[in-house]
Image (tube, rainbow, N blue to C red; front, side, top):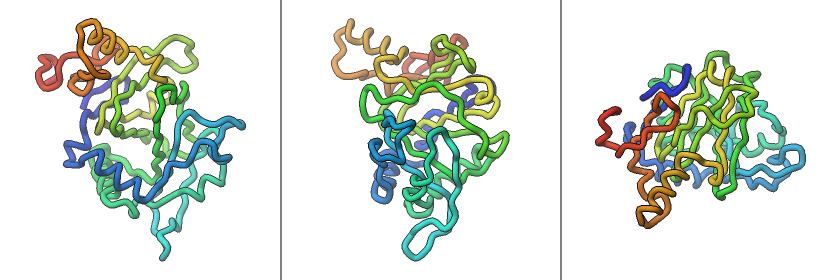
Length: 243
């Protein structure tokens, strides 16, 4: 793990370290939970469709039909009570409860709510924001798990209009721990592909060198943060600075 900024920590390939194959866990989730189409009324924000799809999981006992008996509500901007109809319990997904337990042991906190977010199109994104803490236990980190594709996670000082000051490239199986202090002092985003910075430079460099494929070297990057902000671009496994 590596400290990124303040109390936020990057855990590269943590799922693989736990012995979990990310694609297999995602397939298990997909058998139980459907991403809620962004066009549905309960998913819209101020009448507009989001540029992402969601699902919701909670820690709860279940009834005979497998439905949750206890609901934990996170009041994010645009929350609508109708979305509670889509909530499913951790225990209904093989392996998910075990993953949450491992994360709790590693990070020293407990979790009862998970939001799955899918960025399936190049212009899918979530703009700069700080997560609302009204329904979150003070001092609790907000943890994200990355599956499949590679995307950038941007951070900048709260209420700033400047570009990102910290960029973390997130790979399949990575875990990013957003600390509560960071969330109070900075805002974060997942930009559309066109506004990515580090990955765009890598793609341009490889195109100039005649490397075929879409970002072929990205999964081989070290990815560790540097003092200047952008992740280290040395080859993963042979980086002399982050062994």
